[in-house]
Amino acid sequence: MFYIGIDFSVNFGSICISKDFKEFRWISVINGNLTQKFRRVIDSFNDPTLEVIDIFSKESKTDHYHLTERNKLNNQLDVVSKLVARLKEYVKDDPCIIGIEGYSYGSAGNSLIDIAQATGILKNHLFREIVRGNLETMFVFSPSELKKAIGEKGNCGKVEIFNKFISDPIIPEVRNSSLYKFISENKDDIFNGKEVKSPIMDMVDSFLPIVKFKSIMT
Image (cartoon, rainbow, N blue to C red; front, side, top):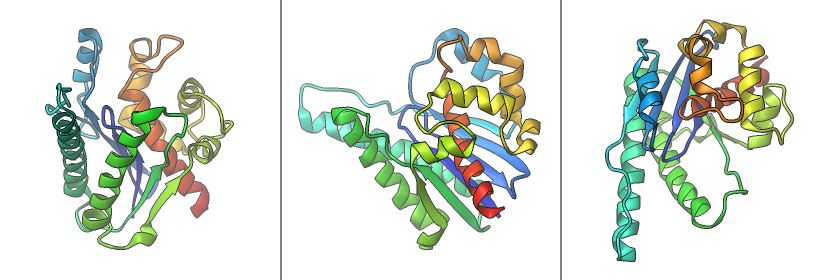
């Protein structure tokens, strides 16, 4: 059985795939800006279970509303199609259970509308291509219950989640994963004491639905 956790955003969407809570791999898109230094850190990934997909259809604003919205939609479709296609290549026809983080209603204005639209596209692709119409295998978890699943308060910040992932990820087997080892070896480049850089933080967040599933199944 594959358990799939998704922390979705258009800029740094990430998927964690776990085989029976024992094996872990991550797929992430880079559709946002990285410093040259951190780009070199990301490019040092040398494990197939830690995969990054570059997206080259970054939305662009124009002087015309309809063209800007079309560019935005094209970008969202590109991100979703590439993520789901790569996920499908890996899981093939094996049974899957999918957990997605729900919306953060603290997002303001159009950003909430945009992520809602893009997430709706993602859910449709997952429903049709990954779980093949079996809606009972798709779960949407609130941000607070995912934070609580790993042993933090529901209103904690990303730094707390990151530190908890390092100190006690709840599922001990993840300590053998490529992501855990990569963070341990490159922590100073990833975390400056105040902020955890993307897409690493997004990958960590995509692990939380896996922890939630583990707590449900045991």
